[in-house]
Picture (cartoon, rainbow, N blue to C red):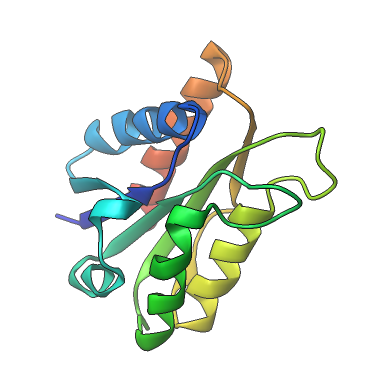
Length: 146
């Protein structure tokens, strides 16, 4: 049975809504899942899991949210070869850089040895009912790749 950790940041609740839908998909499988907000997590915890799920909204003109910055920097100390990961985030098309936080997290995970097994999931603001199902399927698809 796979052991997965999900760590996310949400300001307005949009990314949290995505996280809950992805969580629902993962929990519908046999996988074990731990869910934490980034402020309650340490990057070093990632090494203890088979699968890593990160979620963040994009702040400003394409940056990570402030609450994710220390965690992101601490990831540089890790070597996660053999770990599999996915990334999701809420996005806002009124900004030039659409969902750049998702791309930044994917690049960081790859730089420390993770295999990102699905394309980053970017949802415009809050997920619709159809997008909630897409998020749940994203979670199920991830478990199938472990």
